[in-house]
Image (cartoon, rainbow, N blue to C red; front, side):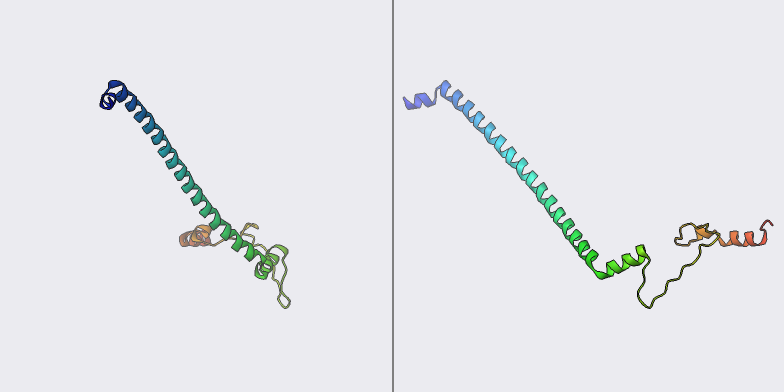
Length: 124
């Protein structure tokens, strides 16, 4: 009787359906676990990046607390000087027109040929 029940079409069809349902649930669970693991790896990478950024900002904060930084800012922003030092203020050059002083390159002044031609053939 048992062998007849196992070999019957009803048992085979029911068993096949249950196996398919079980495998589909198992597949969903495996996929969900994969997605969660991938999300966890992403969060761990973000945590590592934020920790690195936090260390950088902590170092910057420590630098801002130093007297060297405070002294530099006082010199730049407040025009202060150390005792015994003297400050020199230079007037802006006329050719600059009071413009911002930056690095002087050949493009700023022109080529050597242009300088000589302006020197000799300058319109009076």
